[in-house]
Length: 120
Image 1 (tube, rainbow, N blue to C red):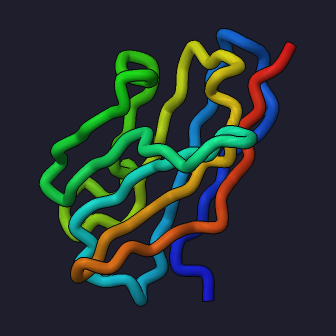
Image 2 (cartoon, rainbow, N blue to C red):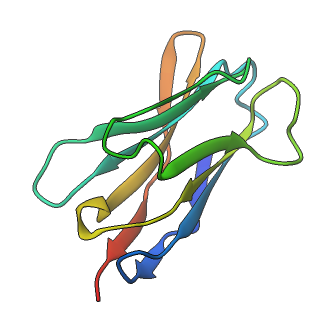
Image 3 (cartoon, rainbow, N blue to C red):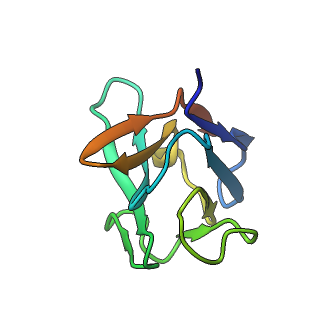
């Protein structure tokens, strides 16, 4: 069963934009935070951005000012279930597999990942 489903990855030129989406299965109840992580080629997975069910956001320094995490427009109130990651001014260093993550009851859940490639 796929508990977190990501979409929106692809190939874009430097300076371009992409929007990633993540939707949690209804079997995941009472999610209190959702995050995006990424794993660049040959590197470890790293945190990119996160949002709590109260709307508090945080970002990695490398993406601050360029990326925005938000609830899906149809999920304006708790429970947290769907988030988007708007990525602007992309550069080759943003190339990675992007993973959605959700925390429920102290347990992390992961999506299967979506590839984002920045190349001219």
